[in-house]
View 1: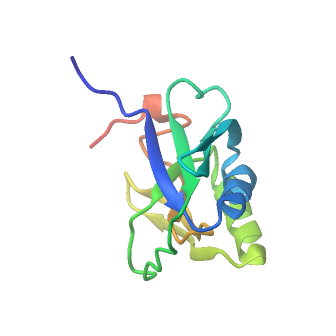
View 2: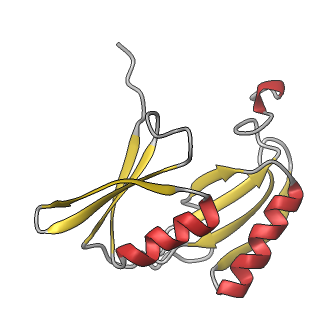
Length: 140
């Protein structure tokens, strides 16, 4: 039997701020929430992926305080360079842009990075061999 990655679970300092961030920038929606162990547990997913991959968040975390040179991140693919630029522009207005749009050789592509309310970094990329259009790209 081969394992399948189904979720990532995080404790966050401000659950409602993180929910708002992932709704606004990542297009995710709350698909389940419940009380659990003295807190609130929230499941979020991209539309259509509710049964394949979710982000679980619950209170009790601390700000991660990552330096700008730390490239630990969650990666989201978008369908164009224009989409990367639009996300970066909105993130700049919100004060959460950490990596302005940049172009890197394949397989990295064109991307920008945001800081979520808990200090996690979130990348939005176009041109990687993952996500929209990836079926036509070889993985090096």
